[in-house]
Image 1: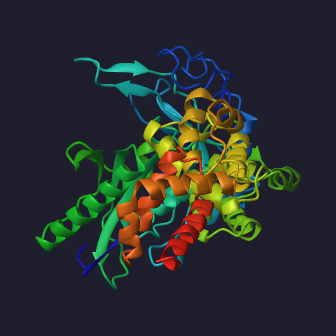
Image 2: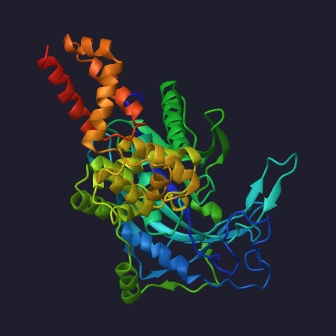
Image 3: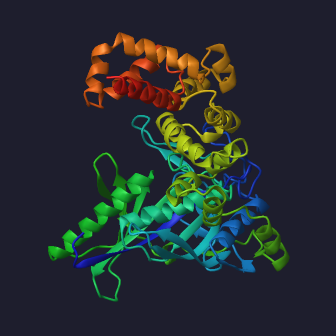
Length: 483
């Protein structure tokens, strides 16, 4: 980015809430159902129907408000946001505008230099989703209204971010929080977490904000980062060329790596907000707020501090393990089986996360249970198998869903730890590789690794490597002393 300018970024994040039914009716919110099957006269906006607010929607939103330090307003109201979309049957969206349920919170993000930065939250409010227009099935546009009325929580940040990386970190923190609270699955690809970005640039030191543009259609964390970087660069180029930035809404085209104009940006008055006459104000008394607050789960920042102390792990490990609540849960289940905390962390960060990312599977569906991973670590620790054999056992555990002790027994993989047995194999290897032994005795120590490899091959990797190392050194020293 041109150093003359600074970017000002605010994000509007929509999180689809994990309620079983929609915001104002009893229809299912289950993703992937046949088009237009999860509908009823209420979510389709038929004349004469009356919406009834889902209590879970309110409680889930309060949870997010409390987790981000927001003020929970005692009274909030629903409004009608009027606009026409083919996939909006009512012709308006039930949302909150002037009196939202949560205001003035914050989220702390970590910057590249390790410092923390506060990103303010302007408001968090409840609303319903619109349907979906499908444009890729031929020459027609198809409408699926299953999503109409699905409950959303909108989190509006202050314009406190100054780079695409900060926006990425903020959005990652939002995803982490909603997953920990178990109010949204955070899946951007399925649309249950969506992000719009408002971006402007100005000369460094200026106080007046530049003209903002809104970016939409960013369906992954990487696309959010790429789109913001592109738009910042684009706005700076326009200003440097003497042009004027017009306020508008842009769509991000990930294939072309560029933005496409969608429409001129609307203002609030364009939507003709007014209080919904069919819905009463939402009243949150102190008792209800306290009850929800007392039942909040352990939040990520608190969990990070505890796990560092409890398991004596590096902060790097803990930040990776806690990024996803269910991976952190898996790790802590492993630690109930084994006290080898760092080894357990290494297995999860390398072997398990690699498979999860490649196969795109959820840790909750991972074939190797936390109990079995803990058992595998324990039988390495007690010398039953070596770490090398463990790496051979793990794929079998994945494929056959068998316990590690069962695999060791079936395939006779128990580690050889008897000194006499290992000495016999060492003597045999030394007899069969006399030229390499002479090379070693002449002072070329690199041959030692070759001899270790031969011994491990003879034992099919089952010999205790530490014992092999010790006994081979001893045998070679004896030969050297007899020269």
